[in-house]
Length: 421
Image (cartoon, rainbow, N blue to C red; front, top):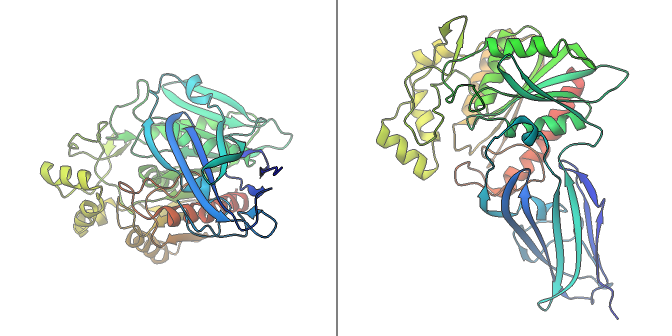
């Protein structure tokens, strides 16, 4: 009797860890389809599925690390293809009820099955962890600051990274990155700054003093190296990360993923609302200069429906005087900077933004390391590796290029912080 098996090594692992998958005990030269399914990603309910069909070798085996599928949701030799190529539907986002619920994210079980001639012959489960079991979580809920502080009790103090989400607001997106950064040896503070509790509902004139206060809070914590503070931000949070590096002298390293070279107009809490003509940020009682969106309400709705806000940003930065006045003075940062961007980012011309930022660094003789990671045919969702990368309509890029950019950039982000903090 054939004893078909799916072998997954390891059977449990952190979200950014690759796994090895092999199939054994099938007939030689047989078409076998392996499917992967999961019903939640972090705390998002979802129907997510992927598949790949292979031809078994002379031993009746398949090694996803060595063989190319003949068909499926991905088309190359890739042991993690089943993870990033999952098509996601029926997504339900939980309301941000309280810090404890946001902190307690269960692991995800991914179910694999292998079938031949329409008959399932083997199944296996893989447990995906979003943070290491050794990590402690402190709920920051004081002085109108809200966040999750991830840390390990170690004899040597660890560097700490402030993690910032983007224009979606809330806390969950920052949490996802902070949890895994802490699992890789750092302390990390996922910090909400709008659309949570009594924080502003819209990203409009958010005071930078809020983040100064957060850095002061970090410096009072145990187990952290107060002289080694970095910041990581994505999208609108990347704009903010560059601003904080230029404003807060205690910040010694900045990673900005999908950044802006200048401050843009504020973002409404409801993405379907027309934005007010105000800055995103303020400092010391004054709104920061900003670049206005060049779009009326009809044009804005068209951009949103077509999933291409990029065109609006391209039109907006044609106002050279506004761009000059609103430029982020990133050269004032007291440490190295890394920026990350995809060529097909649906939210803006990232390659042009990178050139603008890099030119400013060179013109002002920036004395620290400056790294610009550019990824062709990748979009806005360059982030954690091995998570579904198929949500391209509103984000740009292709699933394959988004996935590969995430793997490459994440490894470089970890190395960057390890080297400079």
